[in-house]
Length: 266
Image (cartoon, rainbow, N blue to C red; front, side, top):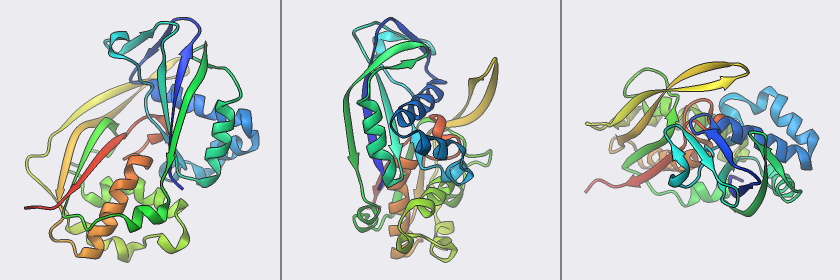
């Protein structure tokens, strides 16, 4: 059952962090929190190849804070104020341990002790995502963090949805999974013109070195009028699910956070 979990973290002293690389901080905090409640489950999610790559059962957003604390690519948050952590879970058994871990006490973010407060979550059953999805005739994806979706522009819809498709088929109930025949209709989707997308580099620390990732920010819109009604509903389901799973690769490090709007041409 996909779930959003958001929590406010209050630092004990001034917290300084780089915004573009804060998805890695969020990932680290996710594992520390999960591990404090269920170490074996945390090891499984971290080490099992079935729980990595495009099929990973979680995603994170960057650490966010108030604009007054942002200076260029860095943020300096005063004690007494907070940053926000958002974790998205795709497996039913992850939510309760994560909530227990958050309730267990203080953690560190960039070596600064932080106290989790105001934990909120909401869930959406896979069945409900399918049942409540309309027959979409237009879909727009707005990337809030860089999406690592390859170099072909504009990408086909099946390429863009590679991560949501893999994650859906990994964690949705068996009777809701989509095979190649179901997904064939997505190839008929056509990107509209103009599509606004901006390429940019994100440099993350890996140990003592920085690694550069090239991703895209902006918006892509697709015309779905050539899709039949069944394919239009599959597309709407996967598009809504992408807000949980993220788009592209490295969604477990804060990349590919997306907002989706569905519509009908008039």
